[in-house]
Length: 72
Image (cartoon, rainbow, N blue to C red; front, side):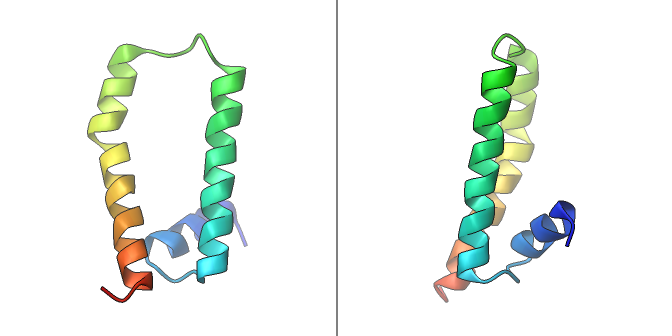
């Protein structure tokens, strides 16, 4: 399965709890690698744009997924 397919399944809440945890750990690992490799590439305008759009959307998706798993 392709990584994008895993992300789509995660967003839709169709991964098992174990698979979700593995994917979340993988995302954290990718973020750490990116920060390590590109420490000087931080652009305040880009960071602001991302935090206002994608991060909020991703955070919302993670919250939905967690609530779905907890049956809330």
